[in-house]
Image (cartoon, rainbow over the protein chains, first blue to last red):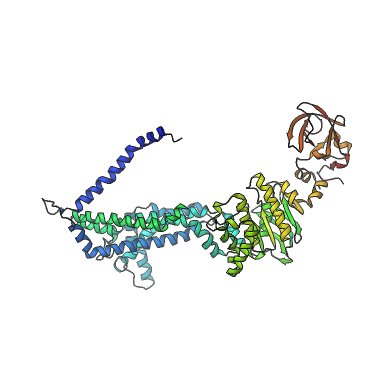
Length: 290
Length: 333
């Protein structure tokens, strides 16, 4: 019953929450933009003069900026590809009736609840360590040279760790979507002469389009800000091999104590994230309308 | 061609035997209706024929060839599902074309067949719409269109009209019957509605807990039901069953008399008090109480008969229309 009175009452009631959220967002945003135009380094005590676009200029022309952008894209793209395809595969397997389904499902979702720092440390020390890690041991026992994961393939290693965390998320959402597929549709397709692959391609995949969109959108938002896994494993190295944009901002503001530069990086990251968001919404958001 | 022969087929889910071994022969071009109360195994039987379920034992022959182990797509049967099972992301055209596309048919031939089917089923105006933009009856027709383009040996219908409203159901019932006359293809139709069974079938198969109670033409079942279950299931309103003294008079454990075979008048052997009357215009169904026979006794009278609640009336059963049953509920000939 949306009468005029109830509508204005609703607005009145919701306004404190909206104002709080607005302030929560606007104050840091404005401060960041403000700092990004100052020459503001914590190592230089005293003046913080206005610097114009200087911070932006130096941040963008820094050679590690290009590397960071590239690494961010590879990291996000790689994890998305692995989790979406892998999640699809896992969901189809888990959709089958089998013994101990409940326990297996809990085991599958478990990695998602492990904190990023913890999972990264476990991977770093127990799996990927060339001397003591399981992979190293296996390689040595088979007579191969063990791979130094974080030295030789640092970015791929990080992608692996992050994918391990996010695979359950994709699996769970896709599994739920798959279970909502009308079984009669699959049977009808079977009667119509569609083999397994055709049923997957023409019936299951279109049915899952919306769920896949949700998985990609949500994951992209979180993957753009991957930080903990990098901090505890490679510290952005070797060189800038695993420095993504988030990590580069951290380096500028907290390792080089250049608040101005860090803020400029932050503003660039906000703009990039919004571009990605608009791009994604445009590209696949139409699936959400249908 | 569409001759189907079921030989001693049975189906169990785990320890539960849903269908005990049964035999059934379906002639080419026949319209066969499986009818029975819900849970009687009629849909399971249809799915066994379709190949969507594996038989536990026995064999299925289609046109003389053993099809027991043939996958559903290779049996040459087309099925219309209760939920229609249309593909929601495809247009009507693509839905109808899907089985042909799966059969890797030439695109020109596909277009021709889809256009023909759409014409036959009055779908031409909606051919580029999605299923979600269609009404229930139109969706039903798309589902039928998807079945007929394949030119199958037999059509299988799984309660196809149960999601439609009453008026549409009558219309679609006619359309399906028309389609059967025109295509002259075997159709197997599952329903729990005995009116659908009576109006459409060449041959009715009455099932109860997986067992075939009787097979026959609608009139055979109506005139000579083999047992009390069939007698009570076929015909609307239900047949009146009378036991004890009145049945003894006819030398049976129980007798049955249909409401339309009892005459109402001022005199007659049976007497009762009028209860609720259901006026349908052409007919009126009276529920008669205190007859000492069955309570209530249902009687059909022509629409214009005017009795009111509480009137006492006399009834005359037509002797030649009394069905007699023994202790086991079987018909006494």
